[in-house]
Image 1 (cartoon, helix red, strand yellow):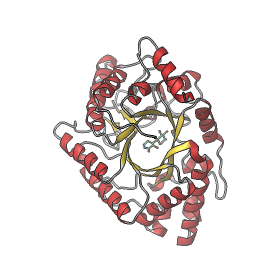
Image 2 (image 1 turned 180 degrees about the vertical axis):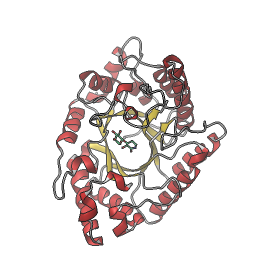
Image 3 (image 1 turned 30 degrees about the horizontal axis):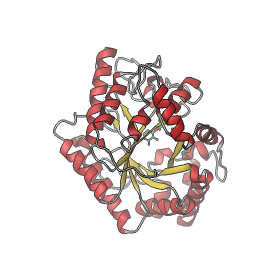
Image 4 (image 1 turned 90 degrees about the vertical axis):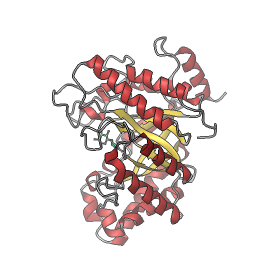
Length: 373
Ligand code: XIL
């Protein structure tokens, strides 16, 4: 028995009496893997630092078989200055994951919106040749660093502008062209990490307001496929509850068919699908915590039921497991100033109705064929 399978079996047998089998054990029985982000907090914010907390690390190891660094593999974290890489924090998380027998997803080699690049990139990418050299240097160094330990990479994140469906620009894309930049990142990732599944990741949602965004993503994927660009996976971030700007989202009601069609079209292109950053933003829900938890669970369940019904979805990653560690504590505050409750565990480490909703969705979803992931 492989170490991970053994750990999984032990976890399934011994997970807290209240919680039942670990989420990953339940999901694995149907051919899906469960993961979570873990990482540093935004300094000075309300978000707590999960990786520094032994109880959070243990919770992740109990429920999941995959780890994603929340911020530590991004340009801003790895590239303090031109020509310099700082892998300290990313290595710490990757080494812990490996010691636990957990798999790794890499996030992210190219986060397209300009705001997510360190300021020095603008100056360093002074010509097309300089921009290309910078991109290739980055992808090779980062995708190459952890080798086979990273089974899938979010190569490109958020390239499509939700307002127009067109491609976003940034200091690299301004020199190379946006589609060329995206394509170059995938080709370089394939070379540097030939064993890894390569993902395009974005936050298009299931509401009517995301139609342009979804269409733009499908157009981008088709263009990449046409050019022979190696894209294996479409990452659905799955930040549900609001739109991508923290505004109230019209409920999915009535739009389920559009979301299904979107997932089906992506799957028909031969892509694997992954929910990569699941949480339920309760920014616009009422104050009462018990009622809020029930509503969060209902929204989460509806999204998961619909999405996991598509068998091409092989991975479900939470953007953190317990409320105080959620990135949503740091942005888009609630009007009443209360902390948010977007994740499956609460501030005391107790499972919430959202965890029950995830269990129910895992039990209800169709099995997918087993295979190496
Ligand atoms: C977020 C982190 O959670 C925050 O700590 C950070 O300040 C900003 O980025 N989409 C993504 C993730 O792909 O990388 C983002 O993570 C959340 C939205």
